[in-house]
Image (cartoon, rainbow, N blue to C red; front, side):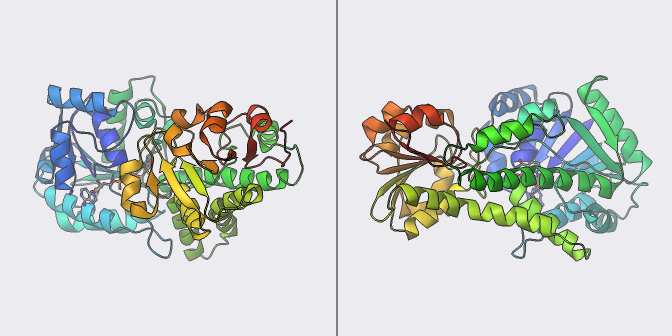
Length: 444
Ligand SMILES: NC(=O)c1ccc[n+]([C@@H]2O[C@H](COP(=O)([O-])OP(=O)(O)OC[C@H]3O[C@@H](n4cnc5c(N)ncnc54)[C@H](O)[C@@H]3O)[C@@H](O)[C@H]2O)c1
């Protein structure tokens, strides 16, 4: 089988290097500089295991990169993994999907292979049917199910564990339009995962698209709900949302995952997907207030962290260390990271901000420019600071001890926005404030 992956971002690159462990794969992107770098073995993103698979794929010649769609004519399957960002009104912005569908249609026009197009990008229900299918049909001059196949096939990998998730996903969801694509999907995934692979769920194209939005909406709802519970916990001295979350999560119907209070969810998926799902449900004339509340609570969280800090110290003229810029550890992705709305607010309040992140500094510099000072390490960042706000639970930040904060800071006030430290240990030794922790000065 020969496979193409169109769109070589976080998802496309992780997908391509994994597929190339089994099948001959060409990964195609409009970004020529990215293609050239990848051919030279340079990874553009921080993702565990990616470099090794890229190198072995290139060496074995099973993996190639191109900025042209011409090679699609000889492919059996084409995975669409282009971006689906938010438009200004929160709806999904489909220009990358339209361009990819048009290009794929034109490129497979003379194919003798009846290729199957898999739509992995996250799209609102109905997009494969109303956007991708007509464009591929128009530009290929063929009918879906006849000259080519089409299958919704949402992606669930998480940044930070993208390779692991691709090699061993919880499930594969298929929404085929035609028998051709279902047959090829089964052959492809059975060949890739073997007979004891993940459960394969087959539903309609719209059902598959909804599984993705439903999953992300439910996960985001858990985060916003625990952040609401965190605010209630803060009203009662000594009450800790961590205990409450554990008490809730030990119920096997609920589970402990995604009950971690913090500065809110960020990243390239949850915020935009919940916004797009809200817009799409509203367009159907449905009440989307549950999703509105999830987003509203999330938007308020950075401001809430600022308020927690202000209860402990004034911000005007203070040296403030923001620890962590990536939206979560093990990635350099800063898209919709909560650190940025936090930093803008701190600057508005007259704070002098210095920042540190082990891998996301280059990306952050393009946004923060000269508004902040860039530190070379976590220790360097807190040196001489009046306030530290821990935002991303990187190992380098989690490993700062109370003694480090006491030794390095001018006036040691620590806001644990991500709940990465033990409140008993840190609270006894320094002024420690945390999301979801009823305030109680524990210092002797
Ligand atoms: N990032 C994640 O963790 C994740 C997880 C699951 C699903 N998704 C979904 O997967 C999709 C891709 O996400 P991402 O984070 O990888 O996006 P990304 O922005 O990192 O990558 C998109 C890539 O597509 C390329 N591209 C755009 N138009 C193209 C075209 N016409 N032809 C070829 N290449 C083109 C861009 O240059 C870019 O490199 C989105 O729909 C996203 O919602 C993302």
